[in-house]
Amino acid sequence: MELSEIRKKLQENSTEKSRKSWKKFTPTAGKVYGCTVPIIMEICKKIINPTFDLTDKLWQSEYVEEKILASKILNKIGKNDPQRTIELLEKFSKTISDWAVCDTLAMQGVIKISKIKQKEIFNLSRRLIRSKNLWQRRFGLVLLINYVKEKELKKDIEEIIKMVQNDNEYYVKKAIIWLKTQISKYNGN
Image 1: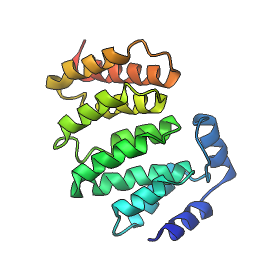
Image 2 (image 1 turned 30 degrees about the horizontal axis):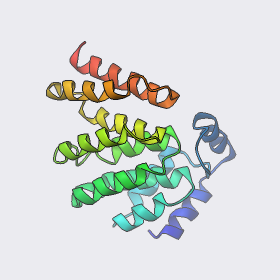
Image 3 (image 1 turned 120 degrees about the horizontal axis):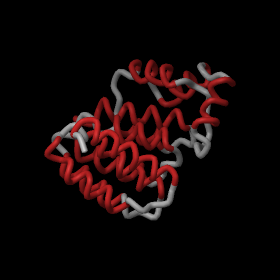
Image 4 (image 1 turned 180 degrees about the vertical axis):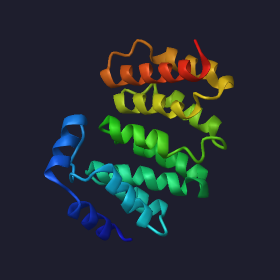
């Protein structure tokens, strides 16, 4: 499926109700088609030979749904070139503008490389939480959600949280709470 066909599918499957929903729940998001996540997932499944190039082109879009789709494609192909995936995550983190795209990329974009690139992902997290960009700080935290079930990483995650504990940005604070809740859920206090 080519980029133009993907965009056509997103437009054809858009509704005003969904557009309003995106705007309501992701108020900082850029443009939206008005396409639901299940439709985005269907489109992703129909992309037979996804590539890093297609992922990059989708990410460059101003549309939230294309960025979500890029994150889901990265999930499918990330293990083919884990280092390139890390590079794209860092590049993409610079243009995140809402929590939905941030969280989708942080969780789904890395899931298949989280084990083999754990050190690099933690290093990326440590770098990003020092950013002036609130979305990079949130992204750096949400990347760690992939590791909350691993008790041996609890201390490392908690050290990273401490580095941003006093952050005043709403979406960063929410990520801290989410991460702490997940650590507690899987590892106790």
